[in-house]
Length: 83
Image (cartoon, rainbow, N blue to C red; front, side, top):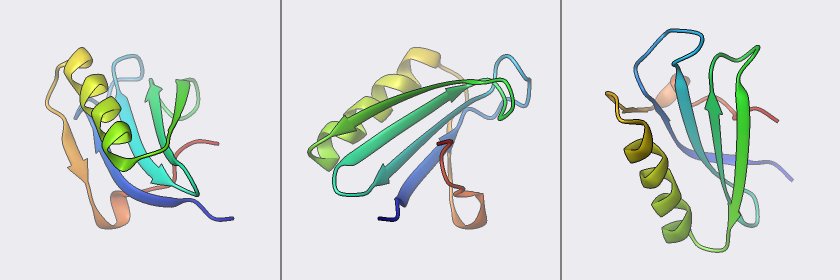
């Protein structure tokens, strides 16, 4: 079953230790994947939700907790979350 990426956000920071990425994806259930750090060394956390509203609430919590200049990534920038 393929995972559909619905949205992706990035905190706008390029630094290896301070970069943050959040994906909202859906298979059967909704998934939120958050990475702290870069793609090679970053820590990845995952959550599953039954509804889109619950998943989007977690995305908002993650962005509020970190602060920064979060921006939604669209088009080609909407890459797949880490596995």
